[in-house]
Amino acid sequence: MKDIHIKDFKIDSKINIKDLNTKVDLDASEKKIEKELEKIRVKLGDLQNTMYAHGKYAVLACFQGMDTAGKDSLIREVFKDFNVRGIDCHSFKSPTDLELKHDYLWRHYLRLPARGKFGIFNRTHYENVLVTRVHPNYILSENIPTVNDISDVDDTFWDTRFNEINNFERTISNSGTIIFKFFLNLSKDEQRDRLIRRLDKKSKNWKFSSDDLKERALWDSYQSCYEDAINRTSTTNAPWYNIPADNKPAARLIVATILYNTLKEYHDIQEPELDAETESHIETYKKQLLSE
Image 1 (cartoon, helix red, strand yellow):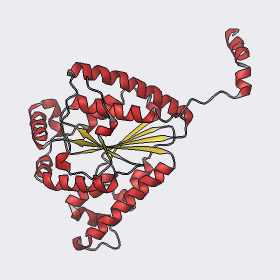
Image 2 (image 1 turned 120 degrees about the vertical axis):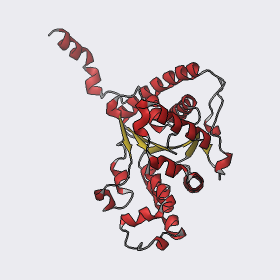
Image 3 (image 1 turned 30 degrees about the horizontal axis):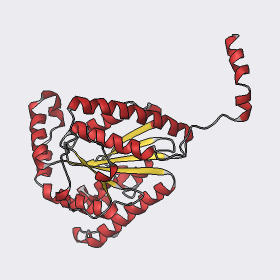
Image 4 (image 1 turned 90 degrees about the horizontal axis):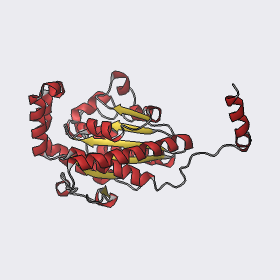
């Protein structure tokens, strides 16, 4: 199987989204890829336990992609061996009435992981510069004082919003949150095939909505917005990774490998040592328990 190198997926210069891979050949069978994923996710789970005890870093893993890109199943498979106490996952849907009474980042701040924990955003704060940019009329429901009409949602508006997102990520990074942003890059042909399978398979029918086809018709608009968002916000402290998503097992292994290989380089993440008082009495405590 081919080695997975972070540099092949990390976006650290301006991109044209049409040049990004949606497929990758790891030169391995699906079974072998799944076996490798099992090994990596156990290591990730062990590392998370150490991070939980260490308590000085949080991890925020953000997943964005078109419908059917495989976000749900990827999250399920990559984080399967985590202790539930050390991980929080949240999926951001349309804002509630309460959320619309706050600034658009408020609900994302509320879901940030505490130090020692992994937080997963399944759809993220980037919905606010993707869906709302394709459908700018959605911005009107935010009741922003300076936006009274669609014409107010102009280039200056989006420039401000991108600056706010970069500042948001810089702030939480400076406070100890390690940020990963994964773009699950799905081809239009593969999305069509997955939507058809969703219609064909009774157990998956519930996932289908006629709105899926309406959004698919806006494919080019979404691709343009993704390209702009990635180019404006892939930073040193909060980089984007292009994850070829046409092959689900490969995408899962790539994400797990990026997470593990990045985090293992944080050599200061160590389990805390026992205080001298407790350590000096370990044998006494053991004798006390054994004598019960």
